Length: 291
Image 1 (cartoon, rainbow, N blue to C red):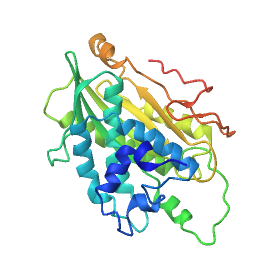
Image 2: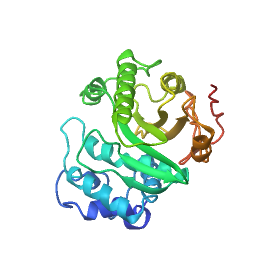
Image 3: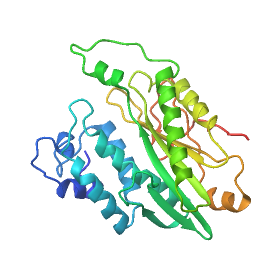
Image 4: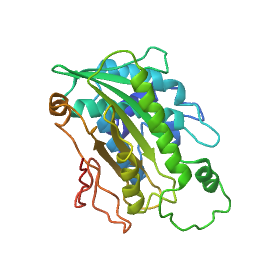
């Protein structure tokens, strides 16, 4: 059992500053804080996420909190609190820059959809980050809402529609970053992906997604793939990240950004229980990306 105020201080602050009695409050639906979060899998996911929220300094956290507050009690009939999590995912971009040793990390909030989400600097290297989330498909939502539930096989191989959605998101994000007028040494797309429920349990799907993203990197923009997976069906939950550097980074930039480069551990199709909330599978061999 996880106690909210002690173990999830920033999630709890978001809850306390929201309309706590609203029937659509996201956090009440997950266990009515500040009492406890009993579900073990959701608990692991919140542990992992809280650690990243803690990386934000006070000013950045206040910016993100204000942006997220309107969506805590805004539940979509089909997709729940997806908009809330889309905004919270921007914290993963902040954590990425912090892990690389960047200082002066700031959210860019100008009310212009064409601006990146974050900026940071380390020594003489500046960086922009655009965080994009690829959520589950409408077909997956439809299947989850079926009643009575229907047994289905797991899905092997990325569906063409999903692959097209990922590629479109990468292209749109890359164009957005390149159109931004302010100069930067490094431009990053942080692609946050949640698999459809039928496809999240097959390791081959994770490998194919990593290869799809790697094949679409460019010399101008770095791609970072963050896979989110929280399941109420089985262990383990996986939150893995693969960082794909552009093929022509200068040595100056490479020195600045390569400090905490990590590669994602692909999920095995044979489910195991050695989950590590910060590194995925502890005994899985990480893929090596070659130029």
